[in-house]
Length: 325
Image 1 (cartoon, rainbow, N blue to C red):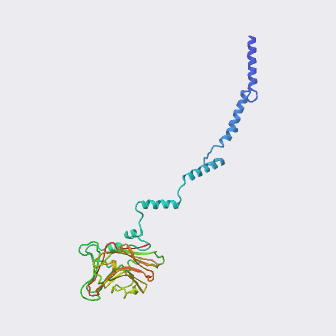
Image 2: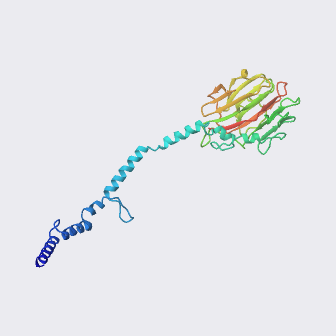
């Protein structure tokens, strides 16, 4: 029995010795080692490498640099478009859909284009059986020379500028006046002023005019020779001769008679810039004037005069448009 007690005591003494031994040799030493690690040893160093931010503790420097590097690499790989590239893509999409609205289309819609709204809304104002509205149009009508509304139920013809009777020199005309006017020499000038529409001279022996004229000019005799000071830029018919004319007070003209005939509807386009007046007839350039270009404010006008023994008439068809670019 004594031997057993002695053995137990010996084993306890050995256990106590082990517990009190150095690190790795005793339980107490190992507990101390574990506590040391938890309190601030290697584990604390490793935790400092973990990106973290709670609003008061900022990202550590290593994490910040790494995150920024990775974010930049991702953006570089994405390669977002520049403004120029994005604009080009937008234009390409619009082109694929028939393009964006042109200056002319904006004018037809009645939108302001370079400060000059659309004439078309005024033309369209003249409905069937309605005479031109004098609050929107300037009219001249001598005796039985008249500007009348749509005739014969033909809704393509808002105006028929007609000189009837037998009184030589009677004239009539219609213009946009100061309601709508355009000038190539405005303080902020447009690059170009453009009129496009269909017109028809009933008899080329007669006298008539279609185009631009100086905004304060009266619509008397259609003769551009007599009215060179009104600085017309348009198509002039007189005694079987049709001229493309422009003026800065002195007339410049080109014979375009070959492209007109009695009672035939013709598409006319007049383009005025600071350096030239171009005349297109049925979409083909037929005359260019570079010497005599009006610097005045211009209005759209059509005129007719009883001359050459003929009762003159001019028709201006629906779709007359003036716009600037």
